[in-house]
Amino acid sequence: MNPDDDEERTSAALLPPAPRRTALRVAARVLGAPVLATPLRRHPRAALRLRLARAVWAVALPAVPLAGLGLWLSWVPDGLWLLAPACLPVTLLLAADAYRGLGHGTAGRYLLVRHGALRRRTTALRRDAVIGWTVSRSPAQRRRGLMTLSAATSAGTHRVKDVHVGQGLAFAEEAVPGLLAPFVAPGTSGARGPAGFAPGATSGNERSHMY
Image 1 (cartoon, rainbow, N blue to C red):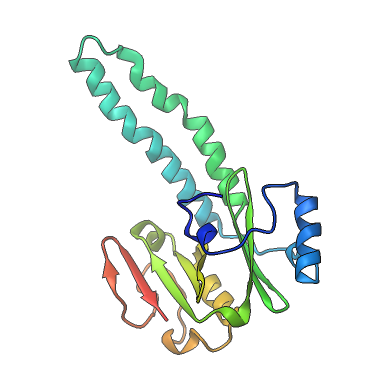
Image 2: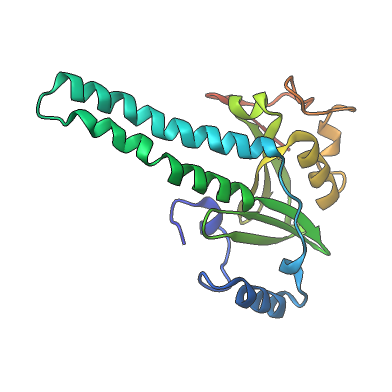
């Protein structure tokens, strides 16, 4: 478990990291049905492009100061900055794997959320436990028509990351009918402009709305 992961701090893990077959068998026994075997909806390709862009920036940003150090300080190797772009293939592979790990859906009385690179984490949350939704959009997400949808419960929050706005709103309505709908303008498409949400609080570069 990751202590920096809010979702891990507020949810119970059925078992430590294990092969998929083992995880499905244990989950089915605990939940009383093969809930986690339900096929999940894929996230849009824009989510992949966002992750690839983040991977490139994560490599490019350290390269610039490293190159400057090589020019100004004689004891710093000139080629030190090459270490950053050398990591690019690995970061791109991790970004692509993180995209493949994204998924969401419903199965009976549960809503399902999956994310993670290398190690997948799938959450099965009782739909009747959801007491509110938080919609957040960073500038990069708004440019790509994406948002992060967080399901609020009395025990914490669970996030559907980088989902298309229309897809996310439809999922919220499917999972808990009527909870979010009164706060969404009719005909909301979630393109590049305002998403049609009721006014919400703004913090830094990310706009969030709690319902």
